[in-house]
Image 1 (cartoon, rainbow, N blue to C red):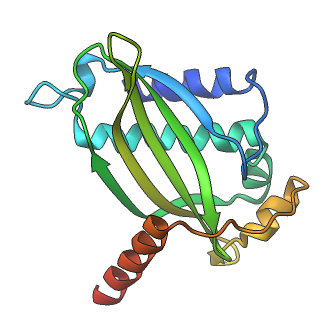
Image 2: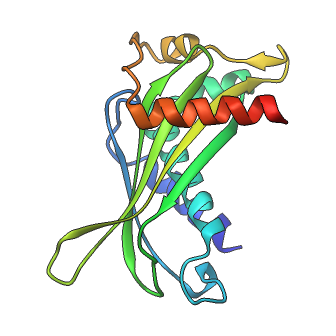
Length: 182
């Protein structure tokens, strides 16, 4: 139930927050680690990181206007790969910011970065975790993934994908290798 409340809150609040450019801006959401986020080691459960990242992607879709063509056409967001690096544990009642941004894209998928950042007592930023996610929109009627160019065109944007950083290239290479192994 707690996740549904976070989603409901996010949808309502995102409708009133400033619009963002999906190819250039960063979504920032603030959260707190609650008791239901903890695992048996009394720090935030590793699965909860992924769940909160879903909210970051949802915020990008809502605030950029991408949600309109997604609902209009009945497209379904699908995460096809993800990689996370945990840096520091997150403990009960700790507040943090989730930063989400699109790094680059291929014909049918985007690569997004998620950063979970907290602050020390003296205000220094700490990177608690960083993740890369490859995701696309699936058109069930067409039985194929939607071209990113088409998606951006639906909201009046034309943009070329930024050059992928080395860590993104390595992530995509590892994902492709794993896909072939399965």
